[in-house]
Image 1 (tube, protein in one colour):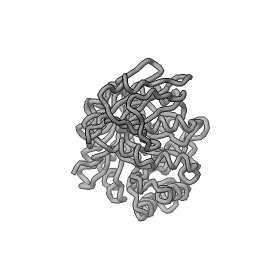
Image 2 (cartoon, rainbow, N blue to C red):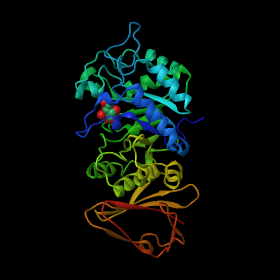
Image 3 (cartoon, rainbow, N blue to C red):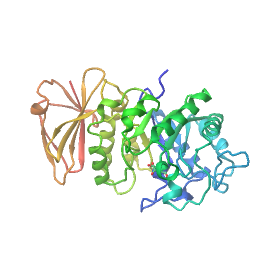
Image 4 (cartoon, rainbow, N blue to C red):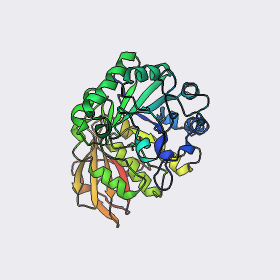
Length: 369
Ligand code: GLA
């Protein structure tokens, strides 16, 4: 069986835990808030739409390991402990995921004054992998966090070490790595990971979305079932992203075959955000493997078309107006050989010779045949 045969889908606590200044606010991360998110995943229809993994990112840990050297949940915020939380999450029908790092310091310890000790998995790889397997973990995000500077580690070797430790547990655990695309992970990570971050963190702003998108342009040859380029987790429903920006973000991540990890507050999301996140047509584009991740096929600088072949021979394309004014797309010129066009969002069919206008910071997702 191929693990992560399609891009993994779920919810991760990191973006949810960021405050207005994009800094982590760990008070938001407790067993109560996380369980509430898990329940909302089920109640909102996200689980039914395919979002299976609930991943606890950095900041869940106690200030030190326990007397057996085990990682443990923060004493005040996760009083019943991580295994108990994992069990409750799994009882809801979700899969539980967790976070660690190959070095001695997690990212939050370095950037967010998170006072803690010995939390990284360096020297504890086997023990941590074993503990995760015992806790019922089915997804591990393993995050670099400057381990070259702090611990003199080499990325490929350090990530491979945890991959081997996970394999040795005999449990199927999706292995998601994050070294921000600094060391060309697409060249080596497909061998032993299921997904690798291609960039630094994505923030809930249009400029950050476009910056991240640009860095995906040449990576399409590297993704395949079981091994996906990861342009970072979704920011839909966060920050000041508008309805159209949220939509464009989702459409683009879908043609990029990106893992879809939501990071908004699911207990408070608007119907509009929920309807976007669970849109079956967009998710179907993301989850379909037609042999290649979407790529940039038309570019004027402000108007772009990103196209992905679908397994049934059709093509999914995002028509993107990335600048500050609307853009016109001439379908007859862009796709001379097609006979049918469907707007995925509305489900409406369109004339294959149409000239469509896309407002600024918006996008249209179409299927052409
Ligand atoms: C890095 C990662 C984020 C998140 C934080 C946790 O910034 O890129 O996704 O995991 O670390 O500290």
